[in-house]
Image (cartoon, rainbow, N blue to C red; front, side):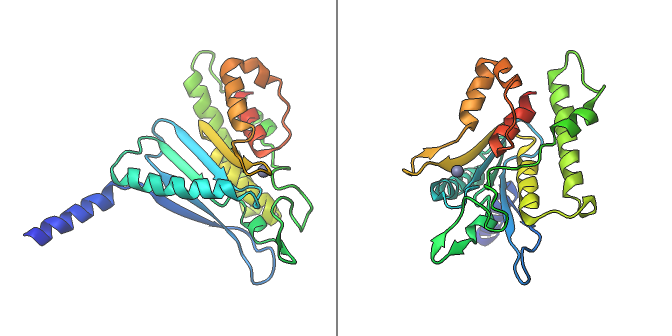
Length: 238
Ligand SMILES: [Zn+2]
């Protein structure tokens, strides 16, 4: 009887956890090699708020990765106790391409050695496409419904761009689209960077969100520079 109870407890624990791991294979950047993005999701999907956290988009900024690693461990414990009430999506290694770049023993994680582009630049900007998709569909009064419509349009637009039939894209472009896709319907986005003294900063995002709370108009006129975080705030508040 004791063994049955123990077994049932084990099953209950298993069914209560919400942790899901999704691995996305990126296009091959060379014969015989293929990188993958790994998404960790906790909490219920589509109910309440969503938080998105990514680390080491500049792949040589390792403290963000360390923070994500420990956060995942803490979330796993919280999840086992059924304490994760909202959706949390974490990408602890947001740039597997940059993580694999080494030159004569020195890690090169900030710029793509293939294209020379800064990994935190040149994100796709789906803003105009989303404007067309939601044209005539937004409500005068229902903010929540508008948020739902805009997020749905963003997801559809990004899914379309990720479809292989939409045209040939570089592995960097596909990686950036997947990161945007994970973040585009989140209420809070944290893009973990660090400066050269390794002091953790949530670059731009927290400052922008503060601005959003203080003055929406400041964000309405803020130009997009196709940085990950900047772009995301631009999409959220325009
Ligand atoms: Zn950085």
